[in-house]
Image (cartoon, rainbow, N blue to C red; front, side, top):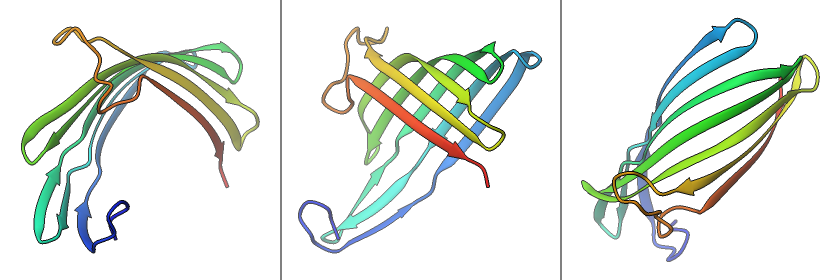
Length: 140
């Protein structure tokens, strides 16, 4: 069922992710590059729509104490609907990762949308101005 108008919806999606990381300085400084796409086809009222969001990010993290990492990240998000470019945003910000125990950790991140070089503006129609993440990680 569609969230807003409630007609039946048929939807297919797959998330494709490429993750690459490297230790720049063993046990101290790490770099990562990630690319994620989630093409989706949705049929509403007999009409098919295709969405293709894409996210590319690069980050560097550094151990500032045992079990405590500070990270800087840049993320670029784009969105296409039915083959037409519908928006993009560039986010930058820090995050903090705290290893509480061998099986528990907490991550807190904040990023802000900044004007990109291509348009010189932010896209507040399709993306938020600020993004905040608080994540509890528990290994079993």
